[in-house]
Image (cartoon, rainbow, N blue to C red):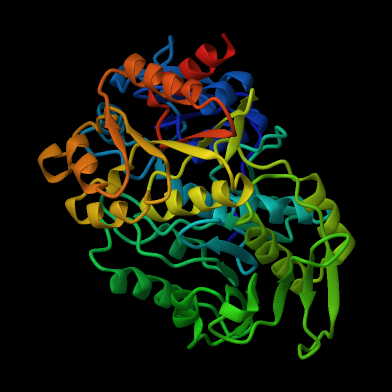
Amino acid sequence: MQNFIKSSMNKWIHIIGVAGVATSAIAIMFKKNGWNVSGSDKAFFPPTSDYLKANSINILVGFKADHLYDDKGRTPDLIMFQGTKGENNPEIVEANKLKLKMMNLTEMVSEYIVKEGNSLVVTGTYGKTTITAALQKIFEKAGKEISYIYAGIPVDGRPNAMQKSEKTELSIVEGDEYVTSINDKQSKFFSYKPKYLIINAVEWEHIDRFKTGEEYLANFKTLVSQISADGLIVANANSKNVVLATKDARCKVIYYSIDRSRAEVTPQWELMKSSKPLPCFVRLSSTDKGFDIIPYERKIIGEFNEENFLAAAVMAYELGIKKERIQDAIREFRGIKRRLEVNYESNNIVVIDDLGSSPPKAKGALQAIFDDYPDAKVYVVYEPNLGSRSIEALAEINKVFDCVDEVFIPRFSRIPNQKEASRFAEIDMKNAISSTKTVFEPDDFKLVQKIVDKVIQEKSGEKVVLFLSSHSLRGMKEQLIKLLEK
């Protein structure tokens, strides 16, 4: 049974934890359908705070039972909450007491966005947001009716969520492997029941949930086993774990490679980066559709985006999208906020913001910097996310920063209701990164000033300051840019 958002000027949805990228997208999706929308969270920071304000979402700071009542004592028709919000949250407690209709984020996506029987899900340790956004752009260019959601705000201002309707042909959803909720430890992507699946990378992450790399890989194998025989998997031939995850699939698997010499299996698609005048995606003649070439222009930084675009192009082409529409979409794609987003560039100093707060994501972001700025001095401000603050993750973090010139460690953002004793502290991380220079400074302004002094002292050559955190770091990046502008 397909469920659609009924347009209404009288219905009210309240979102607990609205400051997340995906939850803010849901808020705006309901707002555009005429619902009254309110949302609460602990704190609000750009880009989601700006996104919510621009769409006139009623923002409520903190979690209070009073937020579930309007000035006439009326309560919401529907409540959505981030799955990781605890049962002791005052708003969840009050909603349960009032027996209000509640759904977590995964349930909301499943009910209002996923197209039953024709669901495309993009998974993998990294790259899934950009791949999903690129696919959305491609299908939009092709004039297809799609529903979609991805956890990133497009630089060009497009919405990052669209509800399904009677006309929807296909849903395209970013499928996260993290837990659905505190009470449901199953990965979110299982709920989206894919017929079509992209797997770009499988590198051990979310160590607080998956205790070993083998357990992490097994989770993807389970997802692959659930794809029906008439489905399709598009998979990265250069990832050993992706190949292991897909080797026993019941459906057709199409492999792609950005470097055929390093492929674990023979790919059906490959990147010809050195072709002139433009790099090309090449469909090899051994495939059932025959040989084809898709020249393209990339306008966003990060050579790893060649792989993201290749994955999106392969899936789109295999589903019948003409290559001209794929070319148009890639040429016009301007990227995602906080995905290697250049925030400042002047006097040979570049400030870049990225959400790479886990070791694999940080490693990928740094590789992109080294590729696009090969001669630059690279300074990193790194704050690991909650899942990467377990003691076991220190060994992984130690491998990431060997080639950077300096790592600046800020005071970590505190996570409410979490047992800090089970997490490592800032000084532990400083000691673990033994092969490179590190600076731990708990005072934000002093840390920013140390970064300014460092880049100013380097009189010649290009300098890159890369912020890697899933939080806003209390506006440190904005402070840095203001000082550099002076």
